[in-house]
Image (cartoon, rainbow, N blue to C red; front, side, top):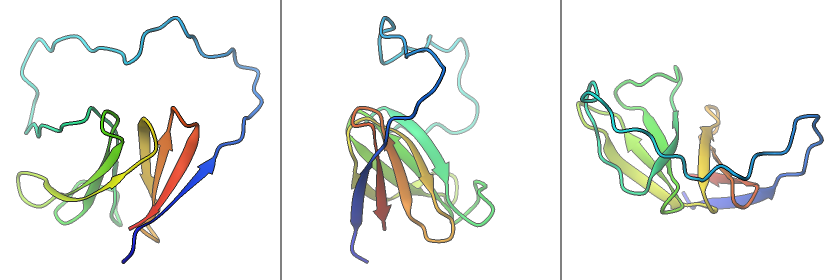
Length: 125
């Protein structure tokens, strides 16, 4: 199936909340862990940020896809969760700084939120 992408500009919304702070450096840096991570660690290039699991139960189980946004490379990467190690399935270019991702379970459409562009990207795989 052909890949179709659509970028939709987000409209500014009014709010009583204060404007975001600009004196905080980005990206934030996490402290070094004091102990080894639990479970299996799968290295990813590109600074993973957002994650969503697709499938009827929205749980991590064999055969479903997990989508991860990679902010350093402006991509969203799909992984098939079969066996012990996730397998790379597909990858798509995204708008700048893709911080979050969602999937419509009825259509499989991937929705990516880009912080730098203040926009949504819709991908029909």
